[in-house]
Structures are given as C-alpha cells and as structure tokens.
Length: 191
Image 1 (cartoon, helix red, strand yellow):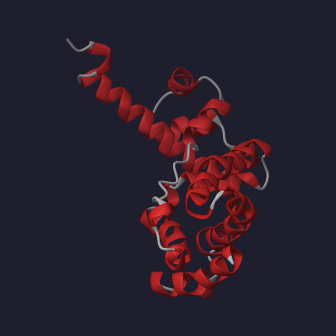
Image 2 (cartoon, rainbow, N blue to C red):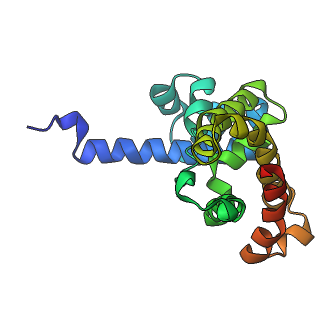
C-alpha cells in the first residue's frame, strides 16, 4: 500500500510548489547573486507566501544548496576513443547549456561563485566529485588530476563568454563551430 504522503494530488501540488520555488531561486541567484537574493523575492516570483519557502527549505543557504544542485550528467568517458574525448567533452557542455541556459544550475553557480565563497566551494566540489572521476576513468587518476582543472577552465571560460557575458563573436558561433574551436584547446590540455 502506498503512503498517501508520497503520492496523490497533495504530493503533486507539493512537487509543483518546490519546482516553482527552485526555478525562481535559480533566476534570482543568477540575476542578483547570493547576497542580494531574498526569500521574499523568490517567493513573490514563485507566486507563494515566503513562509512556504521557509517550510520547504528552512534557510536561504539550504535554498541555495537545493537550487544549485548540479548533476553534470557526464557520459561514460572510458567508452570514448581518446582522439574523440576533447570534442565529446566540449559538445557535452555546449549541449547542456544550449537546452535552457537560464535554468542551468551550473551557470547560476558560475555566476555566484565569483562573489560568494559558498558557491565557489560548491563549484570546486562539483568538479572534484563529477569531472575528476569521469576523466580518471578515461585517462587514469594521475593524468586526470593534472588535466581536470585546465579542462574546467576551458569549459567554464566558454560558459562565461557565451552564456553570461554574451560576447557577440562567441554567441554567433553554432554548435559545430564551438566544438571545432574549443576541442583543440582541450586536446592540448590532455596531451
């Protein structure tokens, strides 16, 4: 028998409310950063009372953590032929950001990490827990440890210039041109 608190109309309403709060929180953290984002502002954009934000998340810190939970959804890099690895990595991140960059937690985290140490630590942890192991599967642990930070600098630099700063020469490139331009830089890091 299913617990009524785990399913049914009430549960769906709760899930919708949480999703609306998280979507509004990502937008606020992206536009205003951690310091200037308020629970009241998030609640107003989610169309709910601020007490509901507090009910679901407790504090602004916990809301930030939930809104910026990042799953990079990296492919199995061990299955990628070495000569294709640079293009696969760049293509993966471009495809991720081209989907909905406004709601991408990694981009919000990147914007916030510049001014907030909690966000910077979350970014470091995301790459240490997700990128490094994925690269280690393809390159071995020693080589991955040497390369992970430099690869991060390439893909995060791309994110910064294309999706946050929106530099026209970078924004004007299509996916194929982006991958063709960035893959050699990632290949040089892997060499």
